[in-house]
Image 1 (cartoon, rainbow, N blue to C red):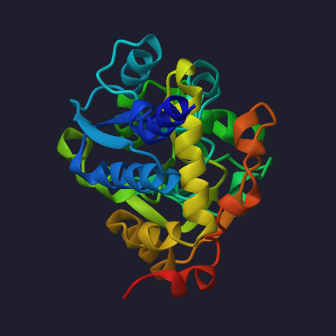
Image 2 (cartoon, rainbow, N blue to C red; image 1 turned 180 degrees about the horizontal axis):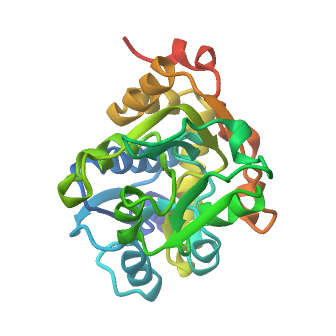
Length: 296
């Protein structure tokens, strides 16, 4: 009997290390290292002898990186990306919005010589010339905007900025988190001065960054999700979230330049997005709802 008790104790002691997971997250830019820090916080909160490794990858097309993850050909087992129906079906999605919905606040990049100011009335005026928005061929944003009745011009990702500058559409919705850095990388060149951010209007809809893992990694994804939800429940997620430099910059943009918010409905086909509890989505429409949370 004593021998069996000794064996049981040994198994209990060794179990955490026997089931320890190594989460290898792909990072292409130093600007995105905060995502790896979120993963570390979640894994630590979940408990167990787990570890997180950062796998540096070249800035390749997101679709290629996701396919490599799904096919098991990648050196990483965790990737972060915006939601899409295809990703929901082909990968295991961790159902926790990493930027609390801030990614879905879309400021509008326009040409510096735009002929008319943007307004919410112009978007839905059937008698006038509609404002047309640029969007990627397979982006979930395209379905969201078309469901709302907006005019959308689609193209391959790499063609959208040049098309904006050539006047193929009036506005290019970009996340308030991403817009300034993307514009900073654009050279005016033959297209003239770089685009600017409209200060009158923004679109808002459910979209965010999520962790994705292979379909076979459902238990590991659940571990990350449990850790994130524990951080939220204990009030430990927000202090880190509001300290992220690009989040602070995005929120300062919303505070400094309050805009008319046009909120768009989420298609019912976006099952995973619609099932995430509202407590994990924050309302950034009104600065008074978040300004007190921002560090000095």
